Each structure stands twice: as structure tokens, then as C-alpha cells.
Image (cartoon, rainbow, N blue to C red):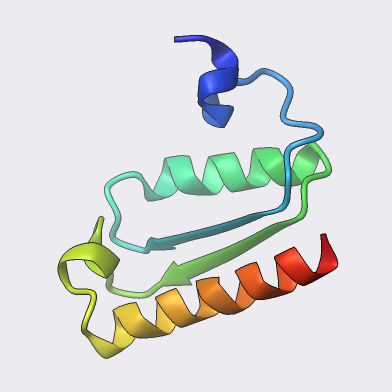
Length: 87
């Protein structure tokens, strides 16, 4: 798969669009998520990170009707509305 097919594989992240990254603090890939977020920032990409305490991988999908998942989805939707309006 070419590097451009997955941003995390790119050597140079400069020029990528703004990003909203959300994950739970007990997510299996939390360290990788944070590293990617930091790499985007170092490349000058505007990044919002939303780390949900006590949430595991995929919780917003398999527990989407819970208040914590709904809150994350709401924050992501609010960010997207702002990003689209500003873009």
C-alpha cells in the first residue's frame, strides 16, 4: 500500500488537513495515537486531541448510546462543524 494511502505511514505530515483525534486512555493503541498526534503538531498540522478516561478501543461504536460515547461524538461533530465553516 502506498504511503499516501495512510497518513500514519507518511514520513512528512506537513500539509495534512486539521485533525480531531479521539481515543480512550485505556485504548490498546493509546501510545501510538498520542505519537501520531504529536507528529502532526510538529509538522504544523492543527490537531485537537480528545482523550476519554476509562474508555477502551472502539467504545464509541459498540457502546455508542452511552453518555460518555455520545459526549465524544458530540465534541467531534462540533469540531467538524467549526472546521468546515473555517475551511
